[in-house]
Structures are given as C-alpha cells and as structure tokens.
Length: 125
Image 1 (cartoon, helix red, strand yellow):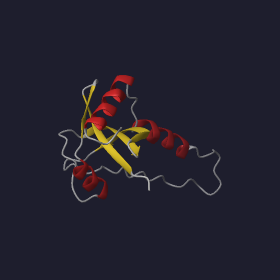
Image 2 (cartoon, rainbow, N blue to C red; image 1 turned 90 degrees about the horizontal axis):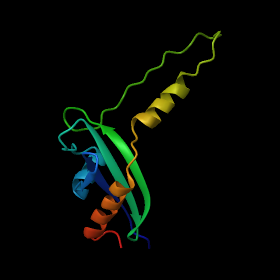
Image 3 (cartoon, rainbow, N blue to C red; image 1 turned 90 degrees about the vertical axis):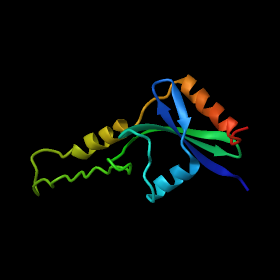
C-alpha cells in the first residue's frame, strides 16, 4: 500500500525555506490550532510525497488573522436585476484574483532546498 504524506515548508526570506512541524500543520488544517509563524501573510510550499518520491509541489500564500487562523474572505456579490443590460462577469474577475492572489512561484533553488530538507527528515528517498 502506498504511503502518501504532505510536508509543509514556510518560505523565509526569498531564498530559504524551513519545515513546519507535521503536528502543527495537521492541527492547523483541521482548524484545531493556530499556525504560529509570526506573520499574517505566509508563503507555504507543500510537498506531496508518495513512498518517498515527490509527486507534487504547491506554492500557496496563506492569509492569517491576528490569532494565527486562516482568514476567510466573505465575498458577497449582490445579484443583478432580473433583466440586466450588462453581462455579469464579476465571478470571472473574482476567480482570477483569488487564483493569483494566493500563489507564488518558487525558484529552482528553493525547490531543491525543500527536497533536501524532506530527504534529511527521512521522508524522501
């Protein structure tokens, strides 16, 4: 049976990542504990490993509230009149913003460092 794990690494500065403790990350994604990283906007690199081999790398940006929990944006769009003169494309612009506002692009060196950290922790082969 394949073993699948997700490792979370926090970007520190532009050229370094540090491992987020697995227990702290698991509690954070379940919503049972805050993520104590010292900043409100955090770049996280998620590594998905299957049997020690990296299958996926996801760079995401988290917006945390003052307590360290994920900040949820309340995006309420008022409905247009029944017979609008204009075509409502607000959802397209909003989806594009949400997709790009919470992503970042890791450098190849940062990815190499993340994979090396995973290997040192006995996860990757």
